Length: 175
Image (cartoon, rainbow, N blue to C red):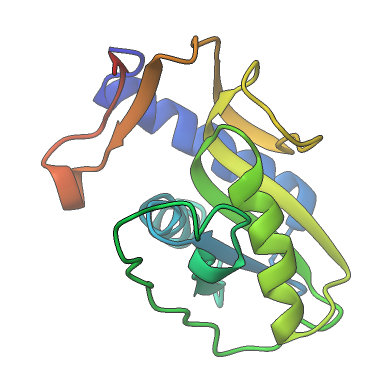
């Protein structure tokens, strides 16, 4: 186990505080959870920012990147798209992409392409719970990270959320 429930909670609070330091009242900032797994982290952070830190009017959207990925045609099984839900303008806003694990960087690259359909953000930052730092295929780094992990290629990082998986935990598992 990389992180237990207490350690996940500590990381989430630290990430929330870092976001507050850089975005104050979030009046010009929007949070975008990358589908599918980034939305759990994004929802948790929004709830924490509102309930514990008193930040109101946080705009949160979900971005499906399925058909923007450069590897989406490489699978034999049919792809199932997720829902994009962005009911606000990203034009000239500070956008914070949120995903659970940063691995190769390809999901983030796809997100950068996909968000352009909704306008031109002022800037884009990246927040991840887990940063697999030695696995990058693209020059993409997080602005905010919960934990940095050195995993070899036959190891997989699995993030579990209480709402979805019954527990808050992060595991390193062998494939």
